[in-house]
Length: 418
Ligand code: HMG
Image (cartoon, rainbow, N blue to C red):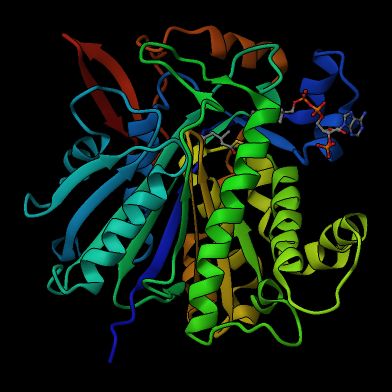
């Protein structure tokens, strides 16, 4: 029998502060409806230099081990997916291993491909376990990032930050993955990039949306071909994409998930044989079905709307939000997931929600993770954004959280809150 492999549990870490997106709109002289209904945002996480990629990753990983009672000696691989790395050489993963005092007997490394980096790490972990090379060990994959475009830019309302830690094992209580059925699509494009030495990303915003949609089409069609051949979905009755109970997308801003879902439906409508909506306009109308969006997508966006873009972690925040809300109802049902990273790379994959999903998500206690945040004014947010990244303010870390305290001789020093 083929091994069952996938995500056993997850934990989320968020920055301690956020701004209300309507406050930001008013401060920028923009109609708040543009940010709320135009982009789908409610709140946006704000970091200070003490909450860097390492601190967020270590906090999420420590939380995962504690909440889910993971024996560290079971971990054989620790991967951090990030595009906000802190060193050209030393990986975030080695910091996490040290800060959590994890055993030396594990692989540690970072994976990078914009927002796709976390999925690259997840697939390496899944395939490591599925191949038998893991020899019974589990993997921890942490997606940790800070999305930063700068003050007064078009990307500003789509910033955010945080980390999601995933426990990957042969006991996939959250999601048993359909190993090998992934569809992938890569294209060499400049849609979003951050040259070495720059703190803020550069982005061709509207072009990046088109790249996302084009790459999604390639990845989804690749998955669909394999899924039809394997008998997971079929070209009869409803469309193949509709046979997935839910679909979680990479969410740079919530409205993007709506655009992505319409594109996925368009792929099915364009490729279906036989009579369907005739004209391209009619197809477009059906693709944008509100009912389909409400059923398959809307329930995954609760956390993304309150945190913002977390690059590598955005898809996994959508998964967390979905299972937090619907883990019990979805048990035993197949869902789809679409990862996108600029540059660019998309991967579509699927899996079945585990019977213990609701129980695992209850332990992750996401409501209290978000409830502990402080709402700050736009003046305070702007002050934090202007702080030098190498000079963290002397703030005591919250219990269970890590903070960067100083950089001494180019070496980063962290403290853990007790
Ligand atoms: P913009 O150009 O300022 O906004 O920036 P817009 O004019 O396109 O308006 C946005 C939406 O608000 C539109 O809706 C407007 O109609 C609507 P749409 O037509 O798209 O459905 N709108 C209003 N709605 C209600 N009331 C109003 C109103 N006014 C306008 N009064 C943009 C938007 C997303 C381009 C910008 O925020 C940006 O550049 N963001 C960063 C890039 C990004 O997120 N790209 C997404 C795809 S690439 C990706 O996902 C990868 C990424 O995560 C990075 C990585 O991989 O590492 C970014």
